[in-house]
Length: 287
Image: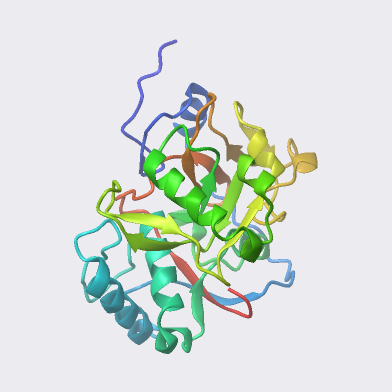
């Protein structure tokens, strides 16, 4: 049966989705909030970024103002409003991270976007705020420099190469599929969104993950507690789905969580404009 490709899946624009992912995603899974088990996590008091958050509104407004001072007119610009939750995507998230990294006053608030591992642990603990209502981009996935977002992939790979020793990586790691957590941004008019990803020394973490080699099919899993993704020996267990890309050229992709049952490693839109994207902040001992 021929499948009509929808314009959006889970509120995200479809670009290069596999038929398997399309079939699975046309019917949204039932909401199943995990039962809190009070497992320890180093992310405390998670909140969704909001213009008028009752406790952290001053911080978020200052952060937005600082972002827009430098990145107005790029894909990282954040609309100026006075109320409601802030729409997020991976480009905006990276600029939020960069802005905090570069501003001591913002650092002093002690809030930072959660990492993929913190996201999964908070989900397991039942502590994420209303995860059934939104999706959240969490990290860059650098599969190769041959497919999606080629310019950005090349720029990120070059930045990683220039920081190998600081990242604890070797030359051979450049040929592996990499998860890039807490990447920063810098302005570059040659890029699709006017910015390119880069390594922030002392903050960005880069690591190879074997599950990124399991492309071509989707996988059942329970929680992604191996640095934000499920370990290979845990695939096939659980009710959640890890969506993977198909083909042989992948480029730079997005790791994102949708609601409580989906973790995706195949989306290639770095600056999705959907209203459903969010950014979760938390107090963390080590961002």
